Amino acid sequence: MRANSKILSVSLLALALGLSGCDSEQATQQLAYEVAEHQVSVAPVNLGTVPLVASVPGSVVPDQQARIASRLMGYIRSIPVEVGHHVKRGDLLFEIDPQDIQSQISQARAVYQQAQAALENAKADFDRFSQLLKEESVSRQQFDGIRLQYSVAQENLAAAKAGLDQAEFQLNYANVRAPFDGVIVQKMAVAGDLAAPGNPIVVIENLRSLSVQTEVSQDLYAVLKVGDTAQILVDGVAHQMTGEIYSLVAAANPRTRGHTTKLSLPEVNNVNSGTFARISFVRGERQAILLPAEALVTRAGIQGVFVVGSDNLVSFRMVRIGENLNGHFEVQAGLDVGEQVVVSNNQTLVNGDRVIFNASSTGA
Image: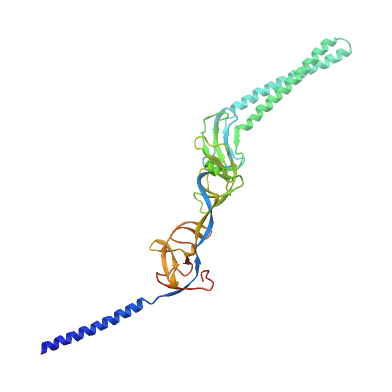
């Protein structure tokens, strides 16, 4: 009898626990189906027109570069500049030993003095024979010979003076100065080297006037023209710059088959010639699906959007996007035209949340 009572008690306890478990499960299911609501703005996914861009590599080049050489033959006495030095117009770049020039000046001065003495002697003869001719003490033929000697002496003096001036002027080329403000980018000699006309000693560039040079293919060259603009991204410069095409070389490079193209570059600091650049040319337009940038959210390292479905419930959808075009991303995969996406208050959304549209929402 006691055993039966125990069995009955256990059965009643199990029934009670079972009923209690059912109530708890129902309560949990009821809580699970309580959907959170968020007030958001939505926008449609539209089809738009985007530029067809061709991107090519290039490099920064100087508009003004000078390979400074000596006009004189002589040993280099000093080069007070080094690579990387900034110089002003008129600053001394290098100095040629003037000893040879001074020797030439001395020789030219001696020739000039001799010519002066010869002219004075010829003038004295000319004056004397002019008086004798008036007195009819010499013949016309003798006088003409003296007059010719006087004329030759005058010409010799003029030639000697020109030679002296030229020799003295050569002394100005002993001190070679910067022709413009710039930076020394190459130094090809040291003090004591022999300088010769035509052999550069230093190379100077004006970094305040730079361009970007690239080579474009034949099909891209065919749609470009002088005056077109392109977007330029230079290594070391955070922002894009706009350049204008000012040179298109019609003759293709026989080795690369590309056409050399130059674009103006706005004045920018801390950029040197030879720096890598990437140029983006617009060569047409194409159709693409565009997504507002505000719609993008990142969940667990995955980029996606919340798409509004039936009964205003949202679901997270992974998307693959392209470049940013004035506040809209090109959608490469994951969305169709006409779908509604959440563009505000979307950072706290989860799958299955219900949304209420703002009055100003474009999807309302």
